Length: 163
Image (cartoon, rainbow, N blue to C red; front, side, top):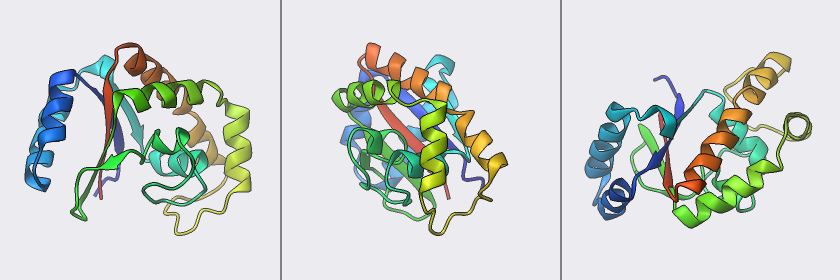
């Protein structure tokens, strides 16, 4: 699998439908609809950098619910919506999106570089080093802008990645 992470800012109707989903099949079908629509201003591709970004914004581990809110919700945070092993879907509520956006405003390249260097990345599939760090840092501006725009529009966010 590709393991490419993507964030989507959801319209209120999409958010309501996702919140009402019952089981993996319904969640996956709705997420596929959102992915197929690919509303460019409301999409943030993180590619494979999502893993290192989540680790840097939390406590270095790749887990749900680790680290401190609100940065813990920026990538692999929020509420897991999919139970299967082949896919990850996490949602962040609109109020939480505003908090994440505000917290990300304080994160710059220097902070992210320091954080990457100081953390242990247990069971990390990437090749740690300057190339991986530069790749990870390159996604930070888009991540900040994505959350800023989603917060301004009062949108929820969903993170997806196939395993």
